[in-house]
Amino acid sequence: MVLKKLFIKAYRSLTFKGILNFEESDPDVSIWYEFINSIPEPQNDIERSYAKYLCRMHYFSMFYSVMANLASIFALLFSIPILSRKPSSLNKNLKHITNNGLLIVKASNVGYEDIIPQGVLEKYGDAYEVWKPEMKAWYLVEDAKVLFKQCLKKYPLRFHFNYIIFRELCMYSVLLNNYKPKVIAVYVNERNIAGPILSYMCENKEVDFISFMHGEYLLQLIQGFMRFTKFYVWDEHYIKMFQEDLRCAPNQFVIYTPNKLKGICIPRKEPESYEYFATYYFGAESIKRIKKVAEAFSILRKQGKKCKIRPHPRRSNMKVIYEVFDGFTIEDTSVVSLADSMECSEYTIALNSTVLSEAYYSSKEIVIDDYSEPERYHNLKKRKYIMIYKPHKLFSELLKGD
Image 1: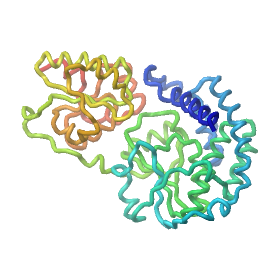
Image 2: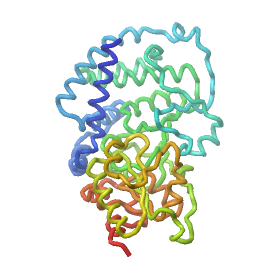
Image 3: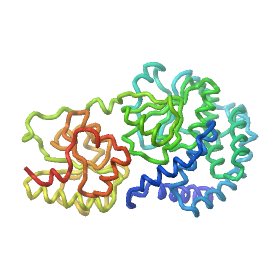
């Protein structure tokens, strides 16, 4: 058990280091285009999941790929007993909840209340929430066994790919068999390489497998070849990005407006009435950006303009932020709501953040940061950042003063 926990911790550390390394410069998008266009057109959902897997592994070194493949051999061997499990032997003491409607698979640290499409709730009624089942509850329904064997046959030496597929098929076998839903809704799942296969399995059981956006998206290779029964997007801009640039399956996209983009505050009529001139919203920022924003705020303070910052509630480097923003207001996200934070400031500043969209749809003045990391700003257009195409100001313009 201890070895298993150490293995999982090491695997997650290496994985997130490859995908979420914010200290490195932005990727060369031309290399992404060259790679994704080199992948043959998938002929079915197994091939589509594998194409998605290739996009995922493009982020990692050969060393990681080899080690992940070797580790997955042992993971598959240890998982063999699961193949012989029968649902009845695991569930005889469990209370079955037949929702017969909408089942939402919750994501850790990300709520869905303000992003779920209201049309889905209106169609299916109240949702039943679940977490993904733990390994001790896993089993494979017959359809899932067939799909897993097809993956093994198609890609026999891709042990890492096959283990990820096996794991996801086990979890969704439990959800389908225990809850008997009409639709399963997931979010924060654009990276899930098993998405196309899970969609196929659900649809074979006349269950829709749907997903929806949980924040603003930049073009990201790891989202390539995505497929759900339906994927709900916030703007037509994303349909073009997903279909044309990332080769996601067509005919799955539905445009909707989430509650979080219906305006969370009302702008004041007199700019002089604001307590703060500007608020900068961080999100997975580099140390370089933190220091440059602090430098910019010092310039604004010399102009007599009061500014504050709001860290990301999960992904900000708080130690560095407190060091370099001494003397500035640093909001406590657990105390100050986003609406209150935005309402008391004339300008909303970020490099790329969903906050800019929320401010835009609240008729607030939005500012895109072209100052702290100019190279990342110039890469935003290449990565299809939607707010580049909306009315906005630039941080460098704000620093010039009146």
